[in-house]
Figure 1 (cartoon, rainbow, N blue to C red):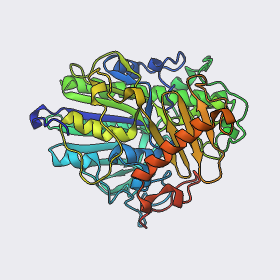
Figure 2: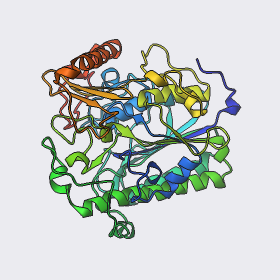
Figure 3: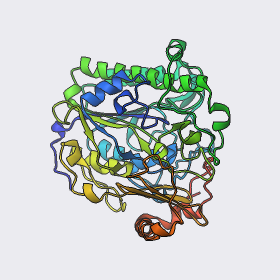
Length: 454
């Protein structure tokens, strides 16, 4: 149980969430090519987690897990939401869920969102939000983007990253004297990698892109790979999208400083899923291959937490944590209770935010799912099980961190594979809601067209 914190002692919260940002796509993560001075400064002022895993390697289910603390086979969002975002058929995919924003709103926070929602019914205020400016669908062209303002469908002129930031700044200016929570959810650096500020694109003309080797085409590669693999213009566009977004993160942090709120504001930065720009021979995330994949670049994301005077600065945390731990940790930090009766799989990693060792750090295990594909990941091993017929994968990450040698099926590793498979089956048996079980729903990576309850 969290320690109850008086309401006046609870900080504001800004959660900045990007779309398709690989764990390698920050300067502070060791990338010498990409320019992210604002994120690097945020990491210097806070703690950067180098082993943060999402619950699913694609946007909508991952975002639903951040919001609810529940896995896809509990909340029922299993793929990116293809239909039911706007219009007469808009579907509230999250109608039966309790979000951490519901808890914050019930405890005096004014909650606002600017940017990507992509969890169904984008035209309606929900889950404690009082300020609602969201993308109609979840992605698309970066200029003249389709947005929802006051419930109306509009096309907002300008570069959408700037549009999202401008709205966030308006929210801060209007509500800085109240206790607030603000989601700033960028569509960057999701495709398309065109339409970005030309001066930023051109600034990458001579970049070696050493962190994005264009490897031979993966035998499972589909989709974006065919038109992007080996294309320097696509690499320039992806990097430009990140750098332009980083500049706007800087604008937000500057405004928080100007308002005198920096020490009273918890700032969190993350991505909804990872991404490969040619690594392993494909462009994409979990649905960048067929069968779906669980490569590290798909399931790991950047994650930074900063609040001067409260969160240790300049610290890199190596503990393995998951997005299903995010809600328990945030509410624990704020001294607010978890919603009851939700069978939440996550645990708070608040000690890591204090610079302390997590009690579970030595034997930590994280899990992932994407429809028929489920993963168990320990410090040294990863096992990927594809129901029902495979192919399965076993990687000894301690010796093979790039996941090049699949040991599944080798007699010498049969006991290890059996052990990890047992962990995986037991864990999902404990948490899966049969009505939302991803193994009973056709999930191919091509999008979800209706809620499971429909």
